[in-house]
Image (cartoon, rainbow, N blue to C red):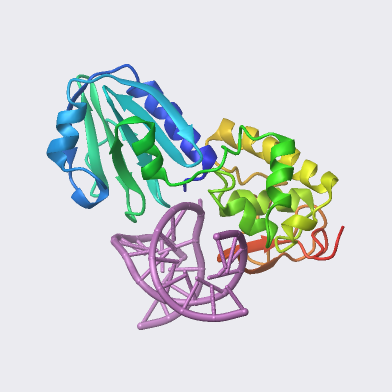
Length: 259
DNA sequence: GCTCATGTTCCCCT
DNA sequence: CAGGGGAACATGAG
């Protein structure tokens, strides 16, 4: 499920239950999902440490434990569960005096990493652009104008802008009335300003709900229905692979040539 | 059995 | 080098 708003929700969840609490133990049920340390090293690093400073950059969630930082990536099926009955997809569990935080992940994309210092953190995450919630309109325009290729591929590229996934990008482009294959460089300033404004609005509303909400009037509410129609004009939505992902757009609202 | 899935990475082209 | 397509990864759901 996880795109930026989902990870924002996981951050709030972690803060609510585990921030400021002391880790009393670690259970590693799936060694593969503990990506860059042994279970022993993880335990040594976090046991008896307090979790503090939970923060998010794009789709990454970070929290400090002593000198170390835990990094979580949720892939496509990751989530947290506090004090839930054991589940086969619980891969790594942090234990506290009053409960346990399970990192659950069915498909086993993503995982948990440990790093010490900003340099190691950057090695784990790889190059990341500014977080999509933080970037300014002028910076977004500059990035898009410096970019070859289609607008959807650009917005999905975590090295340019961190946090947007497939659903969010389709939602943002649909609301902005911009075709997903439009050349990023050729967007008018008023188009990039629109993308920025829409992106911000979509993220604020999605963050409140810790997901991209499939509400009436949202593309996300109809994209997976049979014979999906544009919520604005009723035209049958198009689907095709763009930038390697299933992409949904309205052929009437989002023209390939300039709007 | 088949297809598809909201993420990332690697390989091969252009 | 930058970007795009496609496959791979792992595990389901329909």
